[in-house]
Structures are given as structure tokens and as C-alpha cells.
Image (cartoon, rainbow, N blue to C red):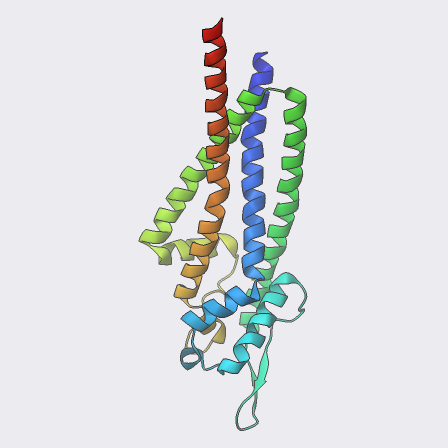
Length: 237
């Protein structure tokens, strides 16, 4: 009996984490390949006057970037013709190499999505085999609560010192310094300044938070409902 209860709780805990991780990967995929969102943020935080990219080229630029991250565009490069007929090349080799690294992260996210979805499916199968509803719900609640604590800590770090948070993320995500770009020479960083990433991060965090919150609130409500039903049955005896 005790072993089945522990197994149910662990299964619920893992299921909660797997659903959250799959949801995060799906959100990041959607945000990274969503051209309309990128275009609106780029126009707001990186206007043509600061990037020196003609306004009419923004839609094409965003289409290239999101297509590259999504896998439908092979090369990270963009060209346009100036008013004098000069052909401009947008990105240096090291900017292209950095975006190759970024695309690799999106490929990793898709792999994480598949793996976490498979783990969640296995957990659902185990839930029906173990048949310990209450313990499974407690495990899901606890998994969501643990993840929420971690998210809150990361959010506080990002709110209090976004620069150090952003730098730490890049040190973890990349094995080279190609992300250290110069606004005076590199269009990529002018198109995506700190304010651009801050809003992107806020949108991603706000969207993602709904998943662990629901996985915390719904199981807790169900647990309370079961307790009330059990109390009523006890009183009637």
C-alpha cells in the first residue's frame, strides 16, 4: 500500500514537471518563430533611426529571422538595396555563427518538447495503473509548487538585475563569446537591444506561469473537494 502511494506521488510530481517543461518548450518555439510578435517588438524597441535599417525592410527581416529559427530558411542573411542602388549585406560572419548557435537551441527545445511529452504520456499511463488519485494529485501540486518557487526566484533576479541575468543565461546557453556584439558595428544587436529581450522575456514568463499555476490550483481544489466528500461520508456514519 505504502509503495503504491509513494509511486503515485512521484508519478504526479514527474507528470507536473514534464507538462510544464513541454509547455515552456512550446511557448519558446511559438515566440521565436512568431513573425508578427517579433515585428511589433522590433519596431517598438529598435526603430529605423537607431538600426539604420529602412523601415520597409523590417517585415522581410523578421520573416527571415523567424524562418531561420523555424528551419524553413537555410542561411541567416538579409540583403536590401539602398536609395543609391547600393546592395547592403546585413550581417557579419560572426553574427551568422551566433545565430547558428541560437537555432541549435531551438532544435534542442523541440527535442525537449518531444521527450517531455513522452514522459508525460508514460506518467498518465502509470496514473491509471497505480490508481491512487489523491496521492497523484498531491504529487502534481508539489511538482508545480517546486517549479513555481524556482520561477519566482528567477523572475526576481531578472527584475532586480536583468543585465546579470541576461549575461548568465548566455554563459550557460553558449560556449563562445559570439553573443558579445557591438551596437556601432553589428546590426543584430541594434535590432534586438536589451529592452527588446526584456519584453520578450516578460511575455514568455507571463504565458508560461499559467501552466504551473493551473497545475497547483486545480489539484489542490480537487484534493479539498475529496476531503469534504470524505468528511460528509464520515459524518453520515
